[in-house]
Every structure is written in C-alpha cells, then in structure tokens.
Amino acid sequence: MKEDFNSLLENLKKCEICKEKFGFQPHPIFLGNVNSKIIQISQAPSATVHETLKPFTDQTGKKLKYEWYKIEDDVFYNPDNFYIASLAHCYPGKDKNGNDRMPPKVCFETWIKRELEYINNKIYILIGAKSAKMFFPNESYNDLIFKNNYLNGKLAIVLPHPSPLNIKWFKDHPEFMEKRIFEIRKIVKGVLEEEKNDKFETNTKGCLSK
Image (cartoon, rainbow, N blue to C red; front, side, top):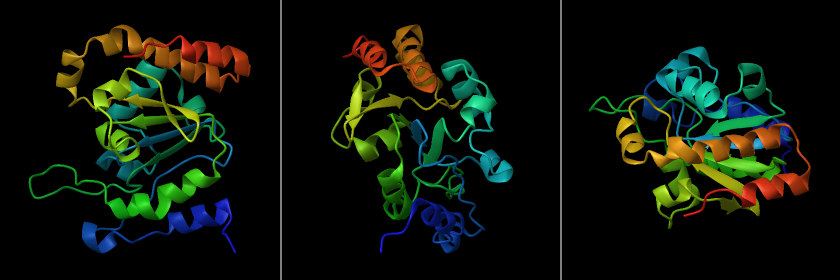
C-alpha cells in the first residue's frame, strides 16, 4: 500500500540517514503542503538555517525574498504558496577545507523524488547549479537561467544562487539583474496571485529565451 503524503513528511522529519556521515544531529528542514503553488528546490540549508530550523533565514534568503521575488515573509512561508525543499534537506556541515559539503545524493533519491510525486504545484523554481544539474543534467546551467524550462509538463525556472559569495557570476552576467529577474518576478507573482490560466500562459510565453 502506497504511503500518503502526510506519512511521507512525518518520516522525513525523523530522517537520520546522514547522521553518521555528518557527525552531528541532522535536522530535516522543509515547508509546504500538497497544494503548494510553487515547488522551490535549492542545494541545502545553511549553517544559519540549521540553527533557526526555518528555511532561508540567512543573507541568501533575504536577497531571494525581498530583492528578487519582492515578497514578504507571510507570503513566502505560506505553505499554500511555496513548497520549500532542497537536494539535501539537512545542513551537511563542512568538509576538511571548510567548504559546505556536497548534498548527499541519498537524500534526493530517498525523499525529493517521492515528495514531487504528490504535490499539485503550478511551477518549479530550481536554485543554483547543483539543483539545475540534478534535473537537467545535459543542459548548460547559464542557458537554463535565461530561458523557460519544463519539468513534468510544468514551467521550471532556474535561478543563480543568491549567495553573497556568488559575486563573480552576477558580474559576468549583468543581463540577469537587468532583465531576466523582472520576467521571473512577474511569473512568480502571477502564480501567487492565481491569475487566470490564459493570462499566465501569455506572460510566460513573452519571457526572454536564449
């Protein structure tokens, strides 16, 4: 008998499959429900999020919410709006060089694939190169950012990582902040405001494609 969505999430909350690998108590962090309009998938929670236990409560989150989407917390954290997850649901810790560890593939294989089977979303947003590569392994990351993509027949937007450390990418690709982000913001707000399907389709077809 197939598990229901609530049972899946309850089991996810108790997941400790990476505890030995990490060397500390992992905290699965996600938010949303089966009818979330937007599925947003990033790489992994940060050390700050590991402490707050709430996604995107760091500098990356501030840029994403307030500068890119231009929405407030009550909209972003409304489970009817966003299903917020990541390739690794838990902060993976640092490697021997002091960098964040790669998200363990076992998390994606064990959880994300199953989560996506249930959610009745309208669009996907993938944040960062690792998320993009997981879903579009044979396509150029930069090309994915500047065009409309599709997963399971639904629009999939790819965003560069909004981390303060990603300065070089933005310097090399000024057209993202000059044009593409406005198109993405319009799509996101259209979905959140539940615009009529025909108007939404018109908006997405008019977006930049390279």
